[in-house]
Length: 423
Ligand code: FE2
Image (cartoon, rainbow, N blue to C red):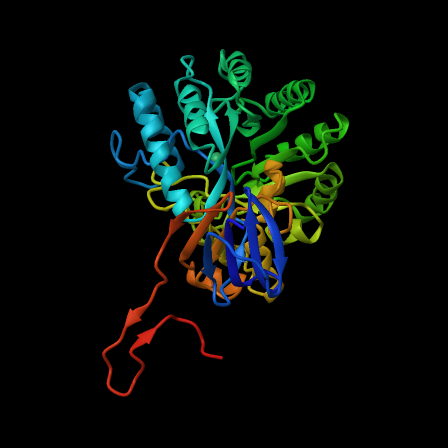
């Protein structure tokens, strides 16, 4: 073997040794009788398939403070700020910031990211930059790109042509933003146009959909119906879907089954939507995040995305999908045991399915990609935002972090704490 991780706890609590060879998981056994060039003793820690972020904006990331900071922290000032920044973007700076973010991601055990890339700049500077980043990070991170017409595919005169050019250049997924078109009819038309284009090209679709507090923003219905009509089940995703939070319950009782039957996946972005939605409310203030537990209960595949890190819309973040899961769990009040575990799935296997990642998982024959966490199970991992003591890509350790320990100097008390209950 190239690498063996011994005494690993899997998400289902099984204790195993994991052997890796030639970039693949070659054996998973209670006691693996083999040797390897390198061994890691997980000592009962959780070993999981890598984190996956199904919704991100890598063209804007780490631009915090350029050309100024978002003083109000609102969506509108963020959009204005992005408009100020766009003409100043250079390809070199975009590549450098995205590469730095990918370093952070790897250190956090985040080895697959779906990033939207704005195609409304006729130069397609960001598209070129992120295609270059995709090529450079390929050995250690799967970067999937979505052609995202930020200003609206119908509202912006050149957006559809630019989107087609971006796809021809190698961008993977068709994006959209129907709620940003000028009328509801235009929004529905944009969904039809983009879904037909994707169906013709055999591509996946991921639209920013109904990211508003307006309960009448119902483009997810059209997206699901078009998915069904075009036979694209399992290949289409609605991102954000925050208007669902404010919709009439009877309408939602029809909508969710339509989404499930259409095989449309949903992505909630808890860190961003808890801060940006409900901003015009006084009190009570709406939370804005889509109906995560209800969608999951109906059998819709739901992931949590990071959306933004240190950009015009969000000043915080570090690429930590456990922080995302932690926030999602709180906002959705998913504090039951199964619900907390489901929040862990929402940053691992659920988004992996949305991206269509091949060879994902801790099973023999899967890619030898995993994360060793300083936690014993998924719930403890979320609670502690546990350190990634080792991150493995294709059987090679690509990052290590120390476990978090505090040294105590208290008479009659232990000399160290690790924030875990002694059992
Ligand atoms: Fe987004």
